[in-house]
Image (cartoon, rainbow, N blue to C red; front, side):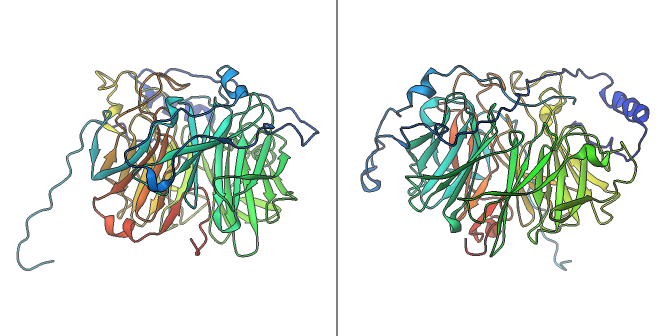
Length: 494
């Protein structure tokens, strides 16, 4: 059986929390995996942060001449080639019809082995030179941008023909950079890249020509951004950077004019006696509410009236509003009464999903949980795999989740109290790198999925960019959705 996440409560008594957690872990092995959180260093000069070479082109034919698929060798900057594998930042694992109708055929979910696809069609794939260590994903026009932890560059991919995505260039950064997190606001011709390495830089680019991003600005944060959310309305664009290692835990920067970024707010959990570090944040479309994933501190909802952020229910010093181990992401469902939480745990039993009712935001209530069958820790189907939940995309009643070794999983949450798995796409690992900071398993699907014009785009740490079409229950809603993204406010113009 999948291990249900039902050990959630609100109490200020650490001893009780520890004892209940120990019951959950009884009979299970829990390893502790620590990464080194890199310290931040400031750099006063705006020069030298990007490679002098600018955009590194990769030889590729014109869109019209792509059949048959050409072969090419991506050009990597000298700095990127010479780099050693970085010390990865950051993750401490703690772990009524009158006529009778035939019953619908329930999808029998297969083990999540490489190459498994159920209710998906494969459209296109590029292994991006099989370099591995890929990170976040962003789209704009006919371009996709894929971050990376080791190459020191963001890869530019031509997706004008989704069946044949082609790498066309790279944006190189200074030696030692980890440009992992990438986002776009296409209607503003804006690409934003956060560096997870020692230097706490955020870079902005003009992507009026998406194939040739032009630097606009580079600005420092007090601590490197581990993740960030881009929020916008008609007049304003804001970056909400979760540092996962503050204080401060959150830095809000106004990017309305990206040439002159302006910090507008800082917030720290410790300042309001909340435990934990802010791993990620989601912001409501109206900008008035924030959903905080506080890792070891659990989950909380906050009212936003910048520069103020007020956590709802934070009235017991030192107590989490809602505890859930390694709370990675908090994402409201289509009905914002419910919020989906993911837990990132790299050892079996792996992290899964909770759905909580936040009608009373000060006292969230668990309504359901979900984990993969791979949480049967005895006799695993893929001993080297990590099968933990990661980043969600909500479309109508469906949630598409990157799930490391589980690939791309699909949950039907029409009834939030009974989530049902209705599809999965597990990359075949074609062109996968030999290993990454997560391990040697060839499937490590990681990025937030992005939906555009009926196609789903997702990046895998090992095997690059995948483009697929969902054909299961609710596919009509997916096909009719022009654009959806989990960590950016989507403009109605998209």
